[in-house]
Image 1 (cartoon, protein in one colour):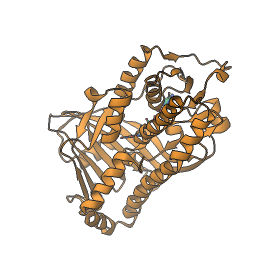
Image 2: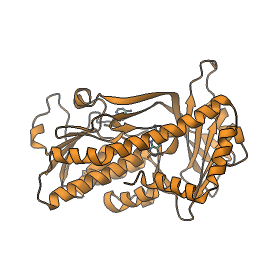
Image 3: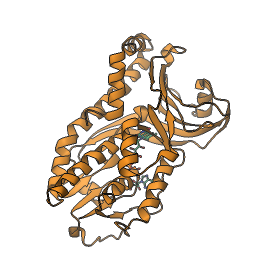
Image 4: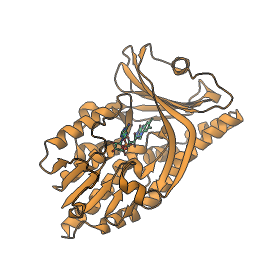
Length: 358
Ligand SMILES: Cc1cc2nc3c(=O)[nH]c(=O)nc-3n(C[C@H](O)[C@H](O)[C@H](O)COP(=O)(O)OP(=O)(O)OC[C@H]3O[C@@H](n4cnc5c(N)ncnc54)[C@H](O)[C@@H]3O)c2cc1C
């Protein structure tokens, strides 16, 4: 069994590692051989996804930072928590994208089932692969087979950076729905906290954005020593209409991209890996070939769930965007009331942890 993965981002390496763990040969075709993830980017991984990652993909226990609480605030109701999620062990874990990437890359490079192949304009022998998995927007396959999607371009940019601060017991993440957009403080160690600030572009406000000033304004607890270089990304969300073409499957953010406010994009991909690997395992156990039927089954099992999940993240974004526009705390107050109901809170925690009944 042989799989070719096009692209070499986090999704590509995660899937590659899950496949070589099943003794499946994987050739990776990086379109940009010098790509390494940005050092200011972090990823929040849910508890059940982390367990799956550690047990079935690769052990990342050493590089994660555990969060026990997530607190949600709104500018319209500052000083009062909208929601408070907690778990004495761990609710979510934060890790640097570049560190997961390095661990996966190092382990794959020494694996006999894994090969990194050079990209040449005429890639030969693609017929020799049972499956081809495309994770890169710039690949030939994307333009040809995966251009039909349901897209939403947010009128926002995400800004990310890392804060260096004095040591504190740092295991509470804070998300504030500010007038300019959602701002998250995501602890990654006792003295470092990552920032993700999605800011709506304002037509009226032509002044240069002073991110440092905004961070200081909303910072509730850190004695900040340094704010690292700020990176920015255009935000959009989309879902591909069709997940595959024959034995070519789209994967990762190419399949579904969502707003980062709930920290769920890569979590969706980990759930996809779980589903795909289970289908592949079943085929192998039954002595069946890996072919287009894997893609068909994968799409059937997960596309509708991914679509509903993406839309619920979009709904949260629209909800707080609406509240911001009407400049009234009525919506926040209703969230506060609903959030006091333990069953509803547990329901939200379960969806954030496991997705929609995966
Ligand atoms: C601000 C922000 C915060 C996020 N936080 C979370 C979170 O907390 N939890 C979570 O689950 N998800 C989060 N996500 C989503 C998560 O980062 C993505 O789902 C994940 O990184 C996608 O990996 P990928 O390999 O599918 O795509 P990509 O990383 O886009 O890679 C796809 C392909 O593009 C290439 N590529 C990518 N960037 C470049 C570049 N700059 N130059 C050249 N080639 C490039 C790669 O080599 C690869 O071949 C966040 C996203 C953003 C924007």
